[in-house]
Length: 530
Image (cartoon, rainbow, N blue to C red; front, side):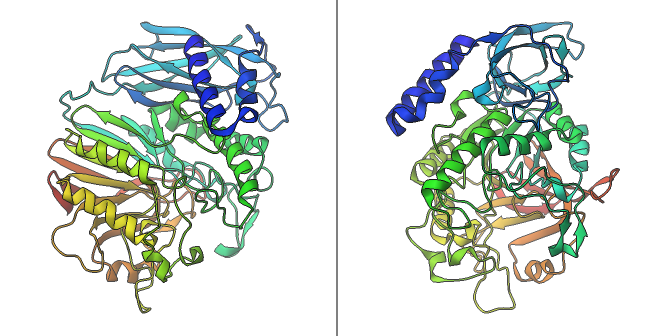
């Protein structure tokens, strides 16, 4: 592990020198010179932020933890030295058959977080892992390796979740999600929210916040670390991480509301916003089960990547923030203006788009999956007004790149494409056309939008403002405004998505149910009630 870490670190250092100059790599150079504490003693439990696994491959996965005995203190209760942490990986829950064990260094430059990349394991099976430091040990977590490339796979079950504003409710949905025993969890983003504490939510009533953020709006690396720590100490979130490996991508609140490129919502000078981005990206890496390939360099971070599940599904994780041009119409929700049709507008960037289409055209899997953040359906959000009023922070605000992507999917004969989305704080199910207001021919792909874990509070079966939107947009087949998550069950013949909801999150003990289920038949885009 140590030699692999140093090799990857050197590659990141060289890339940083090339891209940003010598000043950008000072922190990287410091890492290998830090003296390590081999057998630490802690006055408080050091694994308070839990454990996680992620980014599975046929022969391994990442396991993660972070040492933080006092998460809100200036030094998080840790010395400014590397600390040795042990890990074990077993084939059974009781750790009778241990297949990997070793030590790795939790380094102060990365907030004493640890990302152990395991390899050489068997494909297509579950494993269990745990960490120890000094005399302290974690609970066990469950991880999975993916099936071998191209191997026949009969079924897959996974969850889709995100948008978990800490102040707006308990993570009851995560407790239920963990009990579903999914093969993995796709987290589409908004893992944290950057806002200051708000004891009262005036836009909702007034309504008292269910619980409060620690501190003001976050800007520094310490701010972001403490915010992640507050979220990760939630026991239901820890249950969900321990239950299955996660595939994570970010949306906007991991840095700042509605950011794109080097633009924030307040018009901050990009030179200063880039400083905030660097700190937010580092904190994101520190707290997610990501591989070293995603270690940020300056304001660049490799988030888009692919996971293959045998011959059943190829899952492409996209980044719809880092390479996007500014939102049109001054980023006003429910707007229309000429900029919506800007031919220079972009969402993915040319390189990421080419990467995506190469993956999809070359795929031999039964299903091609686009896992991303912002709705692709181009809904008319104010049908009572003239023209088509769109959500300008979604693909609908970028008409030209949206149509280009759908044209490429259609012309490539990719007739089993599923788009997985979040961001909207509601469940949606719908069909994708080049123009959702003029639906010529069969749909090109099918989109499922997962509602939020907590953002938006308890919610309703359907909000009053969504009724005319549902009725006026034929492409939209379903909407629900409660909290919850998606469960996707996949076979070679059909894809079924279950919209799971909880009846309340403002108090503990909410019950879970399936609000609706829809099936898509392979080779026939479109929704069938299941």
